[in-house]
Amino acid sequence: MTTPNPLTHLSMRRRVLRWTILATPLAMIARPGLGAPPRTMKDVEALQNNWKTYLADGQQVPSVSESLTLTKDEWRKRLDPMAYKVLRQEGTEPAGTSPLDREKREGVFVCAGCGLPVFTSAMKFDSGTGWPSFFTTIPGAFGTSRDFKLIYPRTEYHCARCGGHHGHVFEDGPAPTGLRYCNNGVALKFIPRTGKG
Image (tube, rainbow, N blue to C red):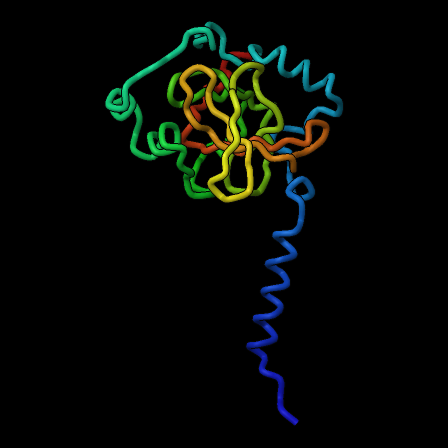
């Protein structure tokens, strides 16, 4: 009779744990970051319609109608290398590297390329993925396209004002939208709401 190898047993347990974690829907492990998400789609619509209440008093932001088109060289001068790679070359930043994933203050997230408001802090939730995640967007902030870079189709979303790549939207977010906008942190800048009660 042979004695079981404890290392083999440990390796199998790790594999089972890894697959269990990967098979768990993200919506089950998602933790709301700034209070519970809205309960109904009517609540979501109200949040979208009132997004400007998350701006600081007197804060000026561009609108989607003010299109921004720059050359590659102009974008390179405007953005740091990682932001350029993500926004202009559809790259992805490493998970867990963005301080915006842990941002909890009230305010507005804008496109790092052009300043267009794209999300509010009330739209954010903690998905546990290592990237800032949102269950809805400011209306009209993004356009979408299909992405086959990982063989299976994904929905990529990009800034409606400058065309910058932000991330991908998945159908494993919290209710009521069921969506998770998985955003690269370097594609965003955060403007805190100050001076408001």
